[in-house]
Image (spheres, one colour):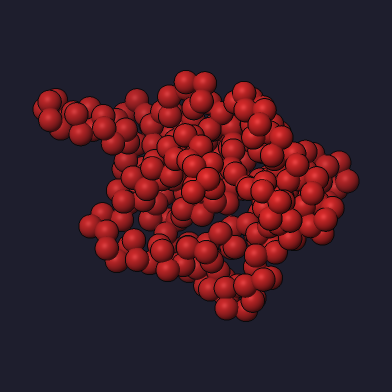
Length: 253
């Protein structure tokens, strides 16, 4: 659920459905009259909590029944170097979207790093399978349009749990839609009628990301008093760190 997989193609329809549903029921959220309860309500910024908890449980069931077993087989069946190669290639394919958002955020230095990584890893790194750029001092970082909106002062809006996707908010849901249509590989696949490659890419992205969080999510669930609230808090912390470019600080240490 914390996996860094952001869907393409089919997920755009799911995203639109979830956002529309969220907007439709948002006016029905009841704000508590008690001052303390009202403060807690506003702090969680989750006026759609009943709907969110429903989708959270649906996503959790699908994860337990389908995604987690596949991720376990993937983790056991492939050696570390193979899984690392797949992750490197998937990250490399995200470079155009990251590059665009670097520019939109007014970060030419980070944009240069992203462009350099893409050129180096696409050539010397055998289509991105080997992260040669990392060894050359060009570390990977994440950027998306949700972060770009945050950099320019857009409020996150109410918390959302999107079907099949997981934790989000109105700002990040909008960013996901923009990232989907700004990805050149999306349009290339559509032009050459090979959209199935997008589904394969998304499937690998989701399964690989989930396989890297098998133990972490199990431990979070075992130790959490309220698993839903814990995931909500962790999502916000993770997004805040990405918006503040704390990945750069980690790389400097």
